[in-house]
Length: 360
Image 1 (cartoon, rainbow, N blue to C red):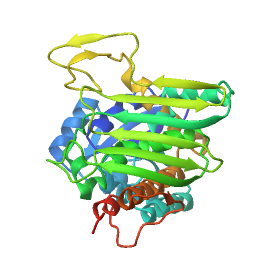
Image 2 (cartoon, rainbow, N blue to C red; image 1 turned 90 degrees about the horizontal axis):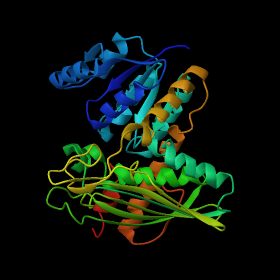
Image 3 (tube, one colour; image 1 turned 30 degrees about the vertical axis):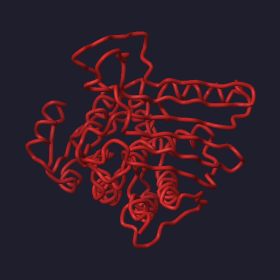
Image 4 (cartoon, one colour; image 1 turned 45 degrees about the vertical axis):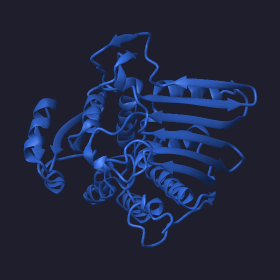
């Protein structure tokens, strides 16, 4: 088995998750790390036993013999770092969202194709065992023809300050978690083309700290008549929800991703890996990383790097999700259904601007 050597950019929560995931992937080795904050980067590298750390991703790309770079940084940095890695001849795994504009997405896809490297889109819901099993059942015909997919993912808000900022995040809950729901629906249905969207966005709980949306309800219409009703929110107190309801002409599937593994606990103080600070009754998960699909996702990408196969989630998928999110911002701003394909006005700098301009 050829070893795949990876570099990691970022020291936040999701960077740590991918470190845990890669530790479960045979033949994958994390050999270098990068953080613009040298002290934070050194501490992260020590804690994760990563041999070398760099203050700049270009120095990492030049200073290490890598097969791939894993990009786990604020959204506005996805494009420039991924582009540099691609032009250095490295495979790239980019955390969601792929980037902040369709032009950036098209450039990444085109440059990866030209360089002969893989552009992998890190959407873990498509690898989560419960969701994967539900799709397997649906594909086997267990519930007949699927006509609607509902998916919900909610908690009380993000863990890092940059998520609240227009310039660094490009948008609020839609960019953070709505992208999960969109790709889940596309993947579950076999990735048919989305022909129209209708969206409602609001800032219902966190107006004291952000102008961005913290609650989203999306309705997607697919080629062939199937639909998806998706909810994403930073306005759920008491923990986190992630579940799906899939409706077919001969049955239904209900899947609770975070429903636990038969363990329940009551805590006055609050604790938990995926719901820190949640008090009262919780359902601790004994294998959070695996149950959320991260090791399976990274193992798939690593195997594609060995074999040259196209990843199940790639740059084209990230581009499709971004286009749908842009259309959702436009729909919420205009209060009407928006047809796809959709391109925003040329002066839109980041996706949420479409919504922030409403009424102007």
